[in-house]
Length: 175
Ligand SMILES: *[C@@H]1O[C@H](CO)[C@@H](O)[C@H](O)[C@H]1NC(C)=O
Ligand SMILES: *[C@@H]1O[C@H](CO)[C@@H](O)[C@H](O)[C@H]1NC(C)=O
Ligand SMILES: *[C@@H]1O[C@H](CO)[C@@H](O)[C@H](O)[C@H]1NC(C)=O
Ligand SMILES: *[C@@H]1O[C@H](CO)[C@@H](O)[C@H](O)[C@H]1NC(C)=O
Image (cartoon, rainbow, N blue to C red; front, side, top):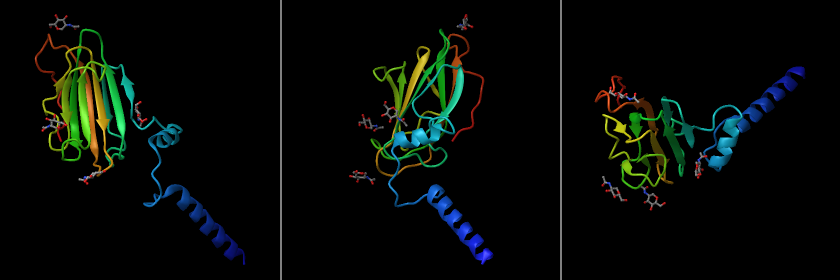
């Protein structure tokens, strides 16, 4: 009898854990806001909409290296020391192949009104030699549509002095 109770408790605990923790394909997906709030109890808010002031940092699409969510919008606003430029390098890039689906936009300066340095997607990945801003800020935006999703991207940036050496002397692994 006691054994029976114990077993029953174990089963209900499992059911509870199961209902809390395991993904259910048919369950409605949490909205970005919910996912963000839940995540922020434990960690940073999913790596979306960040502002960087350090002279170097790394960032990645949400859930990387797992697939990014559908209909996501993320921005990374980078500002480095005055009189320097931002050198941005994508170290991994895997997005939907077709144009006008999931894309990464890179703007010169910190606003979407700035010059577009590139719009990248699976069929048109960012240049392996990296991207330079003209001033000390750069804005990266990622948008996904409601179709298929991919692992996304991983990127690094460094402050560089373009009036000094032509090429920064650090290396990146390439995708
Ligand atoms: C990022 O900001 C945009 C615009 O304010 C918002 O629509 C989007 O939901 C935000 N993304 C996340 C993951 O919070
Ligand atoms: C992708 O589509 C946009 C218009 O939505 C167009 O301006 C751009 O040239 C296209 N890119 C390529 C590489 O064809
Ligand atoms: C993506 O979704 C749109 C409508 O939401 C649909 O018209 C289109 O065929 C889909 N494309 C792919 C490649 O599944
Ligand atoms: C950038 O490099 C040039 C040439 O080496 C140097 O004269 C200048 O002071 C540097 N600027 C900064 C902000 O470090």
